[in-house]
Each structure stands twice: as structure tokens, then as C-alpha cells.
Length: 538
Image 1 (cartoon, rainbow, N blue to C red):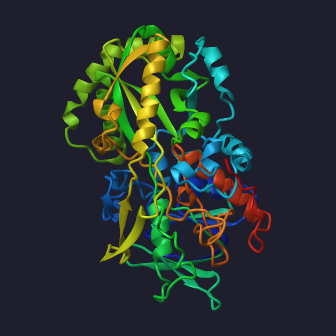
Image 2: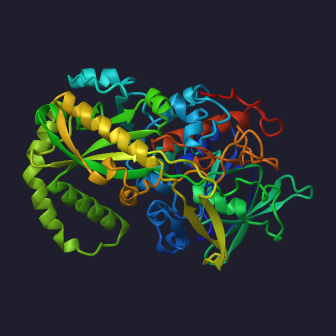
């Protein structure tokens, strides 16, 4: 139908549809597009507007955290059409098969299905995101670059991540959002659910605007796709009459919160600068970006009882800050608000002009980014974390501007991640030296396995868990088909359902899970649940 801003229309705020999706971020928009293409009538419910707004962001800013520092609680969440896709880099990485397996040494219970179940959905997600025009294999990319990756330590593997061309999903799926099968509601803050008489199904989704206007949506099936923390908040709420929900006593509700640990392992000193740059600078072919990284192999994880870890070579250049400030300036102009210090922009432009020619030459001649020989280089490591029940999302008694309970997130980190990070960093150091590529001076605290090293780590804004999958209600909040245990017609889509994570960002896997849910619903999954897929051990 159209995009309707509930704060800018006098039409009755009563809506009905076949499928209601709460949250218009990466997963919600992709699912709405997929379902509409299958002929389903969808209402996409977005709490924010078309652009970022202070009053709406303040809802997220009210959240508090304890335990391990969690910067992404405020900095990594956005309430607007397109959600975080308006601000992310667009990196797409599938989970390795080991992530889906039972891993007792990492306290990771296997997913209800294996990686093979998602293979076709990863392919469909890449096609939907118009990534099928790029090179399908890493070997093909390296061949086009005229570079042969080195044979590293047997515990290590070089790989390439792929980056989406149009990162903003509101723009990428613009034609779908304008189609006849999707109605998008903006400034539609979900404030509670009303159950039917049997208390087995959601009768109405209750909405509230900042100005006080209220509305309702009734749907045959409701999907929560509004981000990990907001999904947990909605599931933790009582119904609009103040009664407990059928799923409220689930032992995993709000628990098992996950993120990744990101830290600087050491400084890198290339032995052959040209060779090093050819191996680790970004590559561009046919408009697609490929980013070289190193990861711990699955065999190494099993053999040495380690978590998933990957590393990137981060080039620190003097002009990088200038480029970042120019981007912020352009964004502020587009939003109609100049950022403090805007008067320094000409200085940044002059600094960038000095490297414009070598930047352009390197890009057009070698299909690479350019980094001058003066650039310092860091080994930056991203690690999976051990899932913990005490890592959880809870509600506070304080209320926000929409009279909704504010959120607390206690991010618990086990600490055993340190050994996996150190082992990986040492293997990279030794392999790079043996291959004659670079010397790496690791942080002494990391080499010593000093727990204080973890205090330097940061979250990656990859928020997961809180409504994890399980084979039964005792194992998780949702089943293998993402249906909430204890109720009909309610599903959860997104990273909130992930019981473990590996090292990659979770966006591509979350979209793949969403597409699988779309197939389930359009194959008659409203009434009958699909059988559980294969269970995996290893």
C-alpha cells in the first residue's frame, strides 16, 4: 500500500493484515520484501521515523548496562526506517559450520539444525542483496588480484569478507516498500500485546505515538524483528491488562545475551611493504569490495578446545580521520544539522587532497585501497564469547517517554576467551614471521594471558541472544522454526534467537534465518510446525 506516518495522518489507526513484522531494520525489511513477493499482505511496524530523531533515540539512550562495558547499547542501535543499515559498513559473512555444533569446551549447545540447513538461504540472501554478481569464491578474487595468499600455520586460514553495495535497506528495498502488499507504519511504537480469549494467540498489537495517539494492528501472524534488546523487552512485558504472558516463565527469556570481543593484539611491521599491502588491503572488482582476514580453522578449534577467532590488519593513516570528519560533515548537511567543529572541514579537505592522486591510482590501477608507507598497522582480533545464562536483559521499574519500562543489560563475559585470543594472535605472529611477511609485537599482557588484557576489549555492536533457539521450552525461547514456545502465531527473527555466534557479524545469518521463516510461513506454518531439522554434534 504505502508508508504511513501515524503522527502525520488523521486516518483511523486500526489496521489488519496477514503478517505483521515489528521492526524495519535489516531483517524486518528483508522479510517484508520476501513475503510481499510471495503475495502475502504485510504490515511493517517501525518505532522511528524516516530519519533519525533525538526524542526517538532517547528511548535507547535510557538503557543501562552492567558487567562488561557495552558501548553498543547506546551507539549501536537506531530507531528509524532501515535501522542500523543506515549506519553500518555492510560486511557480509556466513557462520562456519562449527558454530551450529555442540561444543562442550565452549559451553555451546548445538543449534537445532546444522549449517547445511542455511546454505540455500545464505545464497538467497546474497541474491536478494544483489551480491550474486560478485566473485563466488575467494580463489577467483585472489586470481583477479594477481596475488597468491600464503600458506600459513595449519591452524590458520585466510578468507575474504564481502560488502554490500547499497547498505541502506530502506533504499535497497525501496520498490518493495512502495508495493501494494506492504504497508509501513512509522512512529508506531509497540507498547504491548493483547491476547485472545484462549490466551494462545496475539489478538492485537497495541501502538503508541509520542504525541499520545494510539492504534492497533491485528494479524494472523506476528514476527518480532526489532533488534535483540527490543525483542527481549517486548517479550518480557505482561499483556496490556497486566497479566503474565504464556511464555513469561521460560528459563531462557532475556538470558544468554551475546556480543563479540574486539581488541588490539599488537603492532605489525611489514618486512616487504608491497607484498603485505597486496595481501591485506581491500580489493574492488566490478563495484564489489573484498576485505582480507585471517581466522582460526575449525579443526584448530576442535583440537585445541578454542572459540572462533578472526583477525584483521588495520591501517592507521593520518588521512583516515580527515575522511571520517568529511563524511560526518556531509551527513550533518543532509540531516540539516551542523556538527560542532564544522569550521575545520576545509582543513580536512586539504589534507585529503594531498593523497587523492595515489588513492585514485591505487584504486583504478590495482583495484585496491591505498595506504602510504607511513601508515602504522595493528592486528585487530575479534573473538566469539562463551554463552552465559547470567548474561541477560531485564526490565526496570522506571518508565520512558512512552510509559514503557526501561532496559538493563548485564553483559557477562566468562574470561576464558582470553586463551583463544592469545593462541590465535601467537599463531598469526609466528606464521607471518615464518612466511617473511611481517613481524608482529604482541601486547605483553595478551602473551601472559593476563586477565587485565580483556579490559581493553570492546563490544562490536553485534547484539545477540535473549530469545535463543532450543529444541524445547527448557532449552530456548523459540523452536527450530523460530516460533515462540507456549503460544501460536508469534515468531522471533533476528540475532536474538542465536544460541552461539562464532566470530562474524550476525547480519547475514539473521537475514538467512528470516528467509527460512518466510518459507515456513508461506508453506502453511501458521497451523502446523515444520519438523525439526537435523541435530548436529561434533
